[in-house]
Length: 371
Image 1 (cartoon, one colour):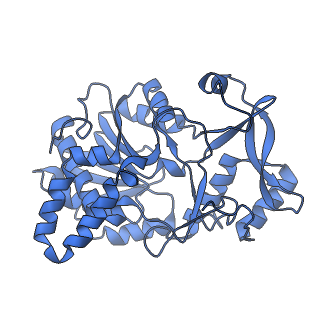
Image 2 (cartoon, helix red, strand yellow; image 1 turned 45 degrees about the vertical axis):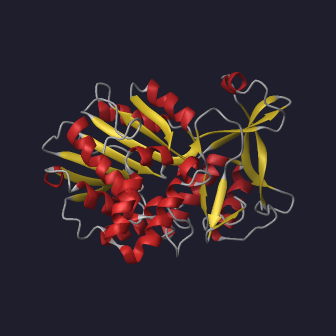
Image 3 (spheres, one colour; image 1 turned 30 degrees about the horizontal axis):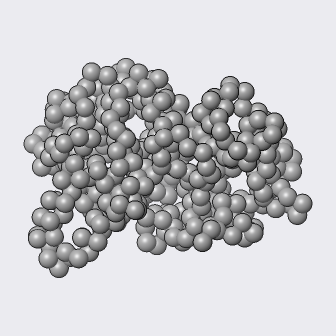
């Protein structure tokens, strides 16, 4: 059932945004989303734990330890076979949540000789609340760990992991009108309540008309403007070799549609219902992402579905071994992995893209099994 657009909660941020709109006029959807997530006083990630059974949503790493372990084995192989086992390298995670995935990654990657002695971990995290959780989770990791706020600022060679990171990037929305494409925004209705509106801002490049020539009136398209992400990776590639793994829910072809969504207490709700108190995200356009990564001079593997990627890494075999070693938890382990690879769920809804500096060989997991 679709979230009720009539539901509203007068959260502190809702009142603050309404006052801002009265003074300055409607804001873009991207500005609204950014405020909901990162407002210093009332933003979602700035003020709460968010992730896990006691939070508002759950990630793959929280569903099953096998997810992080498979990425750990992938990381070890990339360090050894793709980067050539450099004596020092940086393992980076963008948006590390509670630190669960990195904990599992490091545990699994230790099976690769020399990896643990060569690794320095760098976590890109803007939330002080989540950073405190990460410090607690990784207190016994046994490797150097530091934190930063920027997409780059760590030395290459590097391996970057980004699971459910780009879906939280603020997304611009455009609406097809009788006068062309106009930017969708957030304003106030007649009762002074937050409401979607059409701003007096036109799309001037003609790109949307060429991508969506048959779009009917009222059609909505989105752009997360990932140029900053691609430019950061491009800059990193000029300092040394790197490989990145991006995993997120989204679509692989240019598609129209409104994917903005809000989740609170593991239930979907209307995106304007509880500003600052619900997670707000949008589906990633891997088509748009691949275009800007190519333009930045980077090589790309994929996208493939999460099910295909994990299958290529041998997730079924690893799950069987883990179940055999932990018979009391066999049912729990099997159910967790089944959720990760479900054909009508996370297995196909989530896509995986590999990114690498030019000159590096293709990354494992995007063809035949390599582990």
